[in-house]
Amino acid sequence: MLLSVLLAAASAGGLGTMGATLGAGLAAIGAGLGIGKIGAAAMDAIARQPEETNKIRMNMFIVAALVEGVALFAIVLCLLAI
Image (cartoon, rainbow, N blue to C red):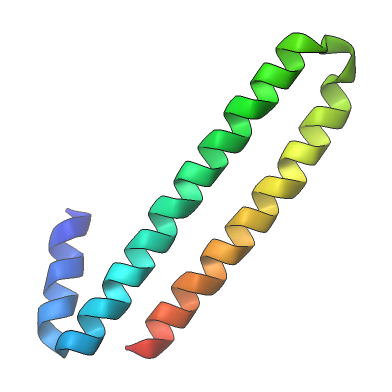
């Protein structure tokens, strides 16, 4: 479904639009992978040191918010390129 929407947008606007849509898709995929790695590392850390759960969770949320901010910035830049 998402692939068909991206391909339709890319074909409608030419080569520059295709690059922008691919860039937006890659930014979203990269953010998903980054948040997944953050969550996995946090769960490992909590399993090793359960008494530090609150500190680990707080740091996990801060880093996840930074990753989301960078991804949102990249997607906005790609959409502005269209």
